[in-house]
Length: 358
Ligand code: NAD
Ligand code: ZN
Image 1: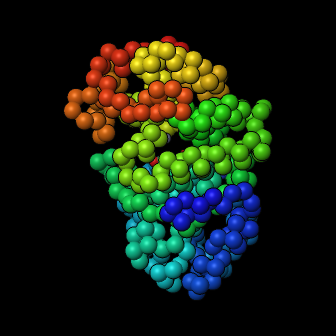
Image 2: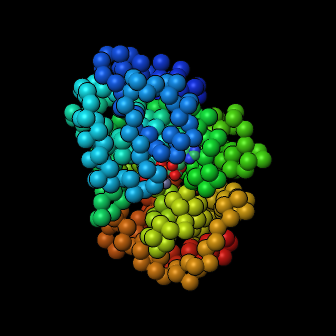
Image 3: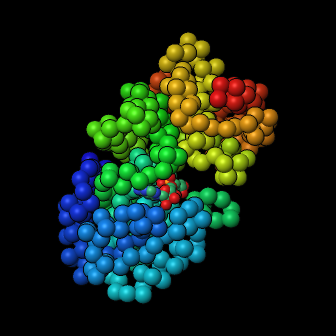
């Protein structure tokens, strides 16, 4: 698959074959060793596989500690220093191998070094395969907020080797599932059933995984095309996310991870969507999400009395205008639209409903 930024999505082969197709010519032209920026857990679990493609003697490796705190100015600077500590040319390839944290951090370093090194993403989490490696956003965090320093910078190619996912922990797997469910609601309803089957280890298969990842790449790159900045269609990707961000903030990113918060947020967003479209109750049903309740297995008991504070947090969201809260809602299945909601009672009811059903 190609997107309009000339980024190539190379689907489903082993890493060596994909690199031979996408990157080897860059590496040869560069006459300097590629920089490999790799997540520490991925290195520990998959070093053998990766060093077949990038042998130690002909590449330079920098390991990124696991966790969101690596998206920092300090880690960014360490990568810059590391890059200049050996031979570096304007065409030295930079290969990011890991989840969204490594991809966002290494992508931003690639954007800045020599005003832009050729970047390659090797996503190793389900979330990074279906979401963060697509669309060209890179960046790091600042005390002022998450992802507040960054750049749009598109990779040359994204290489998909699904063998990495064999070691992905259960909760990280569900993070990706939540974004796939989101694509089902905003774009392609068939994905709802596929995502449920993929969530359950009992019904998961490689064929299904590959079909779902491919559909997700097409949906996200299609939505992002022609709208690199936040306006318009790209906002649809925030379905469930305004609710989710409030929960993440209240929780201080402790107990609920992003995918879990998005799962919860979509149930609330569907509740509000049904209020606006009472004739579409079955299309806007949250049943596909509720069937996964036992798999997500969330304990929201700390938050059930916090609906009021959650609504206050939502009104601080940076995407709002005036006194209303702007939400991505659905007018029908696969029909997202941004709507201003100015009645806080609706939002409190949405949270209360969500806590009741979960
Ligand atoms: P992550 O990169 O933190 O990875 C999650 C965990 O899984 C880490 O502990 C990591 O070490 C581990 N891991 C990675 N691959 C593994 C594997 N194959 N086997 C075992 N463990 C593995 O998290 P993520 O969910 O991939 O990404 C989240 C980040 O992505 C956030 O910082 C978010 O802001 C960003 N994001 C960016 C975009 C974008 O458009 N750029 C979109 C969505 C999210
Ligand atoms: Zn998300």
